[in-house]
Amino acid sequence: MTGIPVGRQADLLFFLHTANVTRPISRDERKRMTAGKRRFKRPEVLRYVLHYADGGTASVPVILEKHVNHWLQEAPMPLEGAAVGWSAGLQSAGDKRATLYSMQVANPRPDVPIKSVDVMPGKNEKGGRSNRAVPAVLAITLGELAEQGQ
Image (cartoon, rainbow, N blue to C red; front, side, top):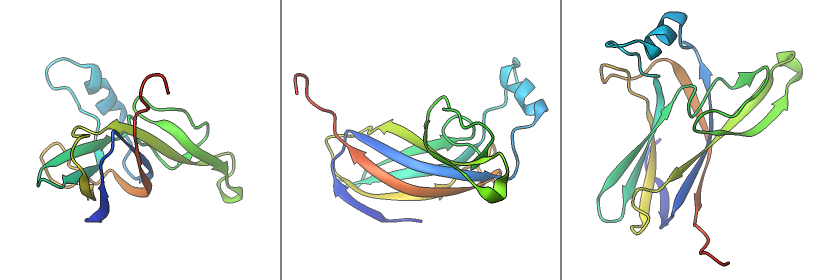
């Protein structure tokens, strides 16, 4: 989805999202994550592109198991770069819970209004489209830092 209108400045952005992970990180990939030379980088599931009023852009990658995970979880837990934003049991899912993740990001250009936001597919290691998961974005919220003493 491209061109989500914003038209405001923001210090922070909050993304509420989840994903249907069709290809989880394998055991072999996990071993390579900690190995030496040919390390495995966690896959990018999606990417937010911020378009600023002055024509500049900034990219916010969303990484599997760091910022987002599978939408059904047995025991929803915070991730390295995202909190559990919402979770609820589903009768059809047994002991698993539907889970949404809340990712907070500092705006790299807080003094420039954000014109719009694009939600783009993630990229794989070779620069092509990632096919690890089908993401779902439910909300994008802007935030301002409170001044000291308020």
